[in-house]
Length: 103
Image 1 (tube, helix red, strand yellow):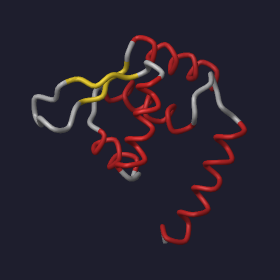
Image 2 (cartoon, rainbow, N blue to C red):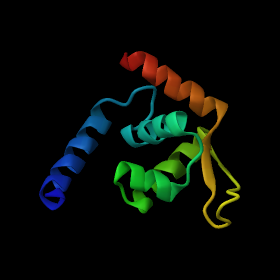
Image 3 (cartoon, rainbow, N blue to C red):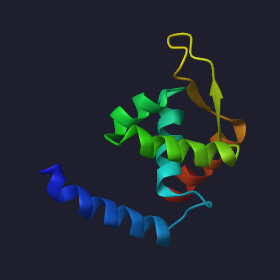
């Protein structure tokens, strides 16, 4: 089923992202910021599993958010090679602004 629906979903996702960047944030960045706001610090693989997305896609999204100062990498006591990702104050403010605009 996903093999049939997946390509359509990705095309729609790209179109929405091109047309409706809120607060200058892509749909992908908004999704990870929302997840981090709701669940607290997570690893990239955890976020990928939660969103049913590839680790690589989530990593690119996190890298984009980190370059903008919205998230930061912190040591993960449970796993030395997989850092935890957490919101910065700027990231928390950005996703709060998006949530207010959406409601």
